[in-house]
Image (cartoon, rainbow, N blue to C red; front, side):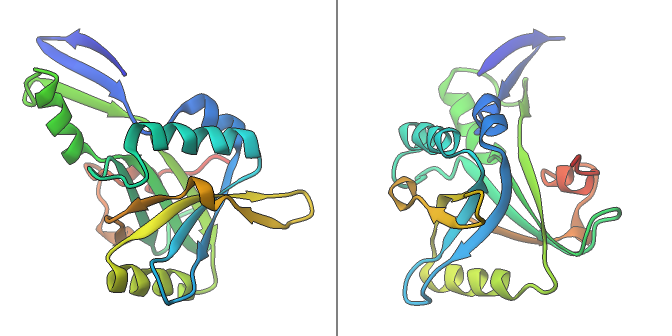
Length: 194
C-alpha cells in the first residue's frame, strides 16, 4: 500500500490484486463448482499454477481461511456489454466500505482520504446463465461460498486447488444496465483488452 498527500488529502493506492502475481498467473476464466449439498465454489481459472498459488497464499496470509472482514469484493455482472460477447463478467477488487474501517484504524480521516484500488475483470462467454443461477441459489441457501484457484492445463484439463480455498459471505450479483460512471463495478463496462 502506498500513500501520498494530494491537495491536503491522502491518496492510498492499494487493493487485493498483486499485479505481478496476477500478470504471471494469466487469469483466464471462471469455474463454478459444487454438489448442491454444501456451499458452492467460485473458481478463478489461471494458466500458471505457481503464480495462482502465490495469489491465494498471499490472500490467506492477509485474510485467513475466511475473509472475515470481506475485504475481497467479488461481483458477477449479467447482461450485454457493448463490444463484448454474450455472457457475464466477474469483477474482483477491494471492498471500499470495509477498507474505510482500516483507514480509521490507521489514524487517517476517511473524508480526507482518496482510495485508488486495482481490480481484475474477466468476461465469461455464456449462452445462458444456468451455472450462475445455480451458484446464486446455493450461495443464498448456504450463505457462503469459497473462492478457489483452478488451473487449466494445456490439454484443457482443469485442476481445482482446494487447499487454497477461502470462505466468503458476500457475493454481488448485478445487471450491467444498473452500472453508471461512479459505480465501483464500472471497470466491467470498459472495453476489455484481449
